[in-house]
Length: 257
Ligand code: DAK
Image 1 (tube, rainbow, N blue to C red):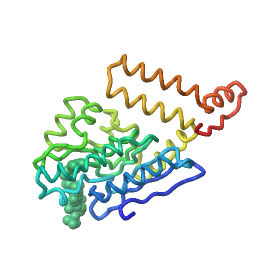
Image 2: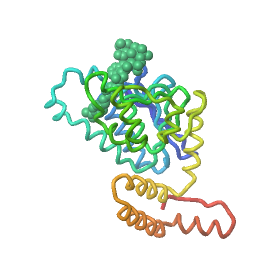
Image 3: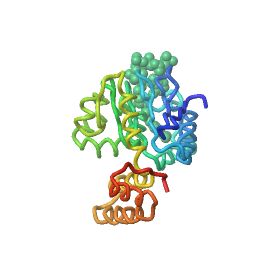
Image 4: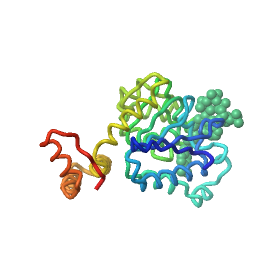
């Protein structure tokens, strides 16, 4: 892989996926996105991985889709290339993904961070959907996910003006869970990843699925979905182990079964 670097921390059940196109501020070209999808699909199947951290570098998580690659395309070319299918498949990753964001997370970069499950921000993080400045609009979920996270007024301000959102604001609005000094953002993401990796992978996956369902359904339907996943945990060895360990006052050992 040229633009994606994967490092597994086997004892911790955590994998670090780094976007690695630093000269272009990790601009997301087709090859990078395809490599990212391939990496996530492999990690999703890898029993030694329970949580994935997605990151860039200190200067940029990703400054957007590759403008140079898009600039001359016609609408029909864009339609036929259909790179959205890559994005749609990334969204189907079952394991939790923590985005560790430092520097620019703009356009497609912000959308990619928002497709992850949790965002940890360094104090230098700048989120934004500045597509309006280059004569277009967000195309990979920005108008929807940003609005769900920030509400209408703030999203309108950001998307219509192209302004950026600081790390503190991102936490204030609930887009990111935490802002930490730049030298700590990966460490912070890893600490959270390790904590989640100690839980039952079955329960984590079913919980992630149920939370995501809340964005797509009315309450009644969401509650029914949650209930089915709740029952399903009782078919796992992990649930038996978790409750038994509680009763026996010991630490559970989850196997993801
Ligand atoms: N695309 C291509 N190259 C980029 C880039 C980008 N989005 N962002 C930065 N670069 C490149 C610059 O061109 C420059 O390359 P050289 O000129 O050195 O060859 C290098 O990275 C360093 O950038 P700067 O010299 O500009 O660095 P500065 O620190 O001065 O400025 C900046 C940093 C982030 C403020 C600036 O680079 C900037 O404004 N970048 C563009 C931000 C932006 O407009 N992002 C939104 C792009 S549109 C889709 C999925 C998603 C999308 C569309 C379709 N499908 C699935 C079909 C999403 C669209 C977008 O994201």
